[in-house]
Amino acid sequence: MRDAGDKILMKRLHLHLSGDQKGKVTTQTLSVESRSTEFPRINPLFQSKEYCIYYATEWFHAGGYASMAVLRHDVCKGERTYWAKKNWYPSEAVFVPTGTEEADGVLVFTALDGVSGVSHFITIDATTMTEVANVALPVRIPFTAHGEFYAGVASATQSLATETMLLV
Image (tube, rainbow, N blue to C red; front, side):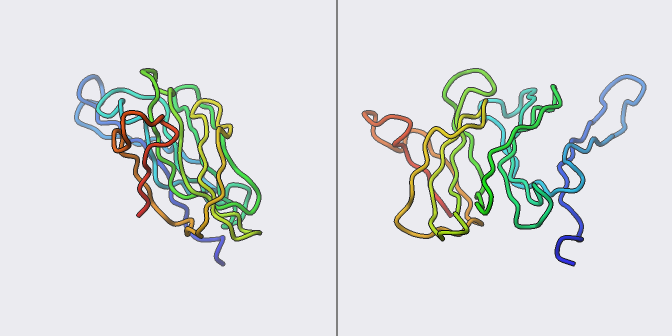
């Protein structure tokens, strides 16, 4: 019964300001309908601009509720790419820009290794979705944690890799 419930679907609303459909709102489902998609993020430099790529947490990734992944969905190209490991449970991924292009950056998040019970701080390349760094943490962090990245919190001498991520 747990796996049969309604799914959370990512939808894009189109507010038609001109043309044949002026004044109408249409929707486009972006999610895979057998999965749930939550916590969408885009490159913060693209807020209020046209963008193609969003990142999100995906539940039911390989069929069951406990199968989770971090999704990169390029809506313009219709391509989905994932970071996923069996029995690993990622938290909300945060995009950290490193350049001026839409996908220039990394995603940072915590993930709980369900087998060992050890939490990890993960950094992945936002274009390829491959791991850049995976650091085991000294404390267990629930995979339902939310995070936010605050650029400039670290001293000017520290690199991007050592800046601050706040988990709440």
